Length: 583
Image (cartoon, rainbow, N blue to C red):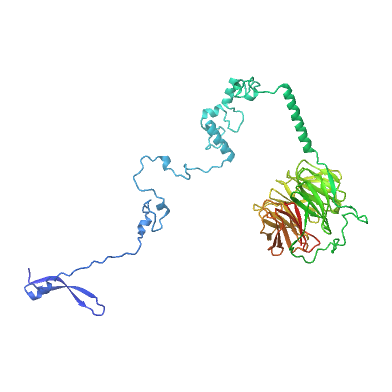
């Protein structure tokens, strides 16, 4: 070894300011024979070392190259730390090449069962060929254009197709082979053989079967004939009409009947003007009781309102006084089933009644006599006189067979039929100075008709609409209030366009399933209606808020009428058989 030895040494300098040590490295030449020169190169005493754990808080992120080249994803992974491409997400699992993969499996697929080429084919033709193939085993070749090629080609059982001359399952002419075979064996179809008694014929022993004797059979035939005749007569014959007068004198000392408008009741009943301001009724002041079953409808005497007509499910119609002693004046009996609707003519001298016995009857209000009866063997649901003074001999009735039938009371014949509804007709309301009328039906639609023209010129039906079995025209003739079966009162314009007024919807009562009649106060301040709970509901017309609710009846409150000359008198009727006056 040379005297001068090159070695790598390190020397450091301490820095008091930052307590850090920096090391510098350099190459120096030292003399190996000099002990002082090599003393500092001797190893120092061992110093204990301490290891520090390194914490890496950065998440694992895939390398850019791995993402671009489409690194395979493990199918068992629940979380991916980067956004893989579509090809990466749906790449097949790694593995050996499938040696059994056929050409069909490798072909592109756009549906579960393979690749479907776009084709223009009629739905009926496709279904016809599919059923023919599943039944007979052959079908037309869809790849051949029949417009360009004259010869028809088939797929599947070609021989069978040629044998059947290409008949499809929808074409007659190809009879079932089994039926032909049965015909050959039996000699014809089962229904065509006179002696064929059915599959159980061989088990029937005529000796054991119980048959009536000739006398018994004759007696049975007589009984059956009587029953049929009796039932037919009961169904066809109308009930006998009669009337009961409940007051002592029909005429007063001046010879005036109860139809005469009283002048001593405190208000002018002959006036055509409505009260200036109406108020909410607060209490019950009278109850008319006389019906033994639920009351179905009530109508006030035209213009004056001094008499009240009521129809009931007890098959009777009653006439009541509204003022004075408020007595029951007369009962009209003439229907064999519940009375559904009633309607006065303009003068109030006559009225019509419609009942479930399929009859419409015209009555004289003063004498109680039944003037005439009308029927078309269907149940009338509503009846209305034409309010026009010149057409008082005509009336219309909404029937259960979806028709609106127009009768002439002079001849008793049907003069017009309006047949456009798809369900039973529930209401008829005249609008636009009686030139038109509006009808509602169980088909959840509202139709507007010109008088005597059997085609509706306006048809209103929305998917959200429900059946509206009660409709009332407002006193000013501008609005129609319709009781909807979704527990709402809807307002339609009654002029020109018949649009739904979406700002006027009256809610808060329960009427689903019941045709509760709606009415307006004479000054158009309030809207009143009964409900299924027997309550009388009163809304404010402007704000549509429910102002007042009164428990009026024990059962359904089916109708509410605001007296046209009174500021706060409301008449209600219910299925508890009572009619009540509120003030």
